[in-house]
Length: 118
Image 1 (tube, rainbow, N blue to C red):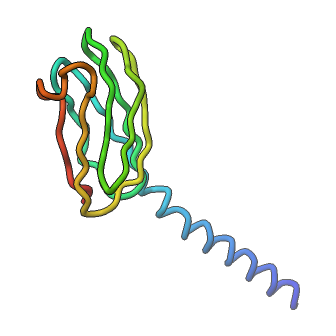
Image 2 (cartoon, rainbow, N blue to C red):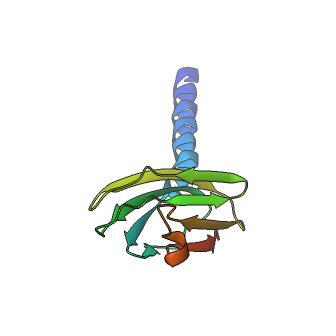
């Protein structure tokens, strides 16, 4: 009987551990970034937590993607025509993040923006 109780407690503990881990996994977000001459469009407003930015270049020009906020900076490699790249960042709630393309004068031509992680 004692072994049965221990086995049941072990099962309950394992189920509780999986349930506790599941909400963290569901908070990860993917945001598609479309770079065109001369604009950057995000598919969704990034939320706090782990965010994977998947960058697609849909123009004839090369582009990269920079993200800065909360004292951190992330960037992709330069992506050629029809290329893709990705970066993963952990965003903090209430922090303003800026993003831009650093190639040539693209930023000054409108390839920039910002958002607050909410």
